[in-house]
Every structure is written in C-alpha cells, then in structure tokens.
Image (cartoon, rainbow, N blue to C red; front, side, top):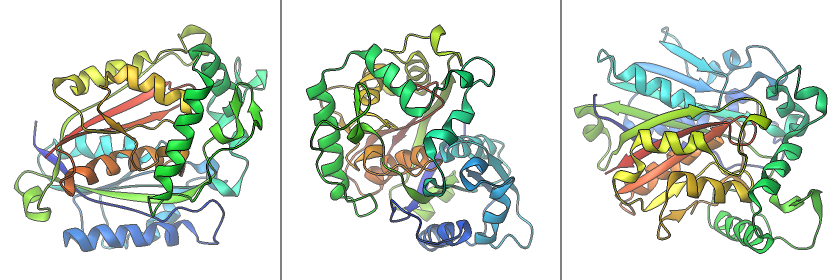
Length: 339
C-alpha cells in the first residue's frame, strides 16, 4: 500500500439556518482554503459526497462543480453518501499509483427541508418506510435498546455543546435545560441541530505529502462495514459493523489520543466507544461533534478532518476519525491517522 496522508482540511463556519448561499458559494471558500494551504491548483482526482434529496433536485452535485473551476476537464467522481465515503474512494484511487493528489469535499444544507422526512427515504420502501418510522423514531428505538442512563446522556450533550462553543466552526448552543421530550426517551436537546455547511480535505501520496504539509496525518488504516438494513435483524444495543471496521483499520494496535465519532445522538457515543474499544483516556469529540454541528453529508468527513487537524498541530500522534450512515449506525467507516 502507498503511504497516503491528509495534508489539508478546511470547513465552513456552520450555520443553523439558510444564509442564502448557493451550494457553489458554500463550497468555494473551503476549496480555496485547501488550495492555498497546499499550493496546489489542480488535483489528480476529485471526489465529492452529497445528497440530492437535501437540495430537492436531481444531480445537484453537478452544479456544485462550479466551485471547482473544472476547466480544463478534471477527473471527478461523486458518492451519494457522506463525504467520508468520498475520501475512501479517493484513497483507493491513489493506491493505483498514477496520481499523487486528491481533493475530497462534502456539503449539505439541511435547512432547506424537513430532515426527519428526508432521511426516511433511506429506509426500505416496502417494510420499513410504511411503518412511519423517521430519523428520531428509530434513534429512540436504539436508545431504548442501549438502556443508557439519562444522567449520562445529559452529560454527553452538555459537554458536546460546551466543546462546540469553543469551536469557531460549530454552532453556539446553550447548555440543555428542562425535560422537553422529542421521542421518548430522547429529549429535544439529544437531537443533532439543523446545520448547513461544507468541508474539504486534500490527500497526498508518497513524498508529495511531506512537501505539502510539515506534519502530515498518514492514513495507517481505513475500513468500512455494513449491517443488515432491517432493524429487527440487528442487536441495536451494539454496533457490530463499527467493531469490525475498527478491527480491520487497526484501531487497537496502539493508543488513541483523540477520536472524532460521528455520534448524532448521545447514546450513539456510548455504543461507538465500546465498539471501537477506546480507552478511558481517549479524548472523544473535542470539537463538539455532531451534537454541536451536523451538516449532513459533511459531518463524517469533518470527523476525519478534525482528527487529522490534531495531528497537524502536534496535539496528538495517533487519532481516529469515524463516519456513519443509515439508520441506527447501519454503516460505519473508521480511519486511523498517525503522525
């Protein structure tokens, strides 16, 4: 395998409402920032992650290419997934050996529609969708199955929001108060905030990585796994796919100083910590995580970028970035980064 590293990461200052920016206008500044940091104007490969349902238009990712100045023609691909899966595709592409750089980005404007209704479209249309399950309903099923202590969930939310207030890119959310129930046992403050935002990452292979970044975050392991679509075929209190991906990526081969987990609900943080086998001294989601900012289709990529940033600035030598997709942690991607 070729050595591939994250050499630049940028994200928007996320908002909880529509600021009127088009998707190219949202993406453009982060693309410009990673270009400036690396000095690269063109890349061997470009891959993006987004969701047409969020934009309410087919092939909406094509219009987003206006932010890239894609002329002369570029080698480009797209995944209808979180940008973390675009990063995986780019990593595979770099393994071919004929290119040395890749640009990855993800974006989403959740404010444009009803996210609870939109996310129902990822369910099986014959057996699950007709039940009327939405994003909060199946999250509540999992929270009940996990049996987490209410005080522990409240502390996770409080800490996430406090960390988010120290993060200039996250939302400024107050500490949780009251007993406003969303779908029992989940409170309204357990639900990730509606967020618009984007993020970009540059990957570089071989000697190029050390030339572009003084402290590259090398991808020493990356893997993703999935579980059955139907919720009744899984133990919702655990995440077998996250555990399998963590083993394949080599999380347990050394101490993890920082882990950025794509935990959209507080009980997911508890399930993922156990699945990844993280020790008590591992710092989890110091950025605030998805409970402080959740730009759908970019949240997982941001987790990897935040984990890489800790390596770039010398705060950690070994970190983990995690992304998930599907109902109740159905699909999980784990990336191990090292200085």
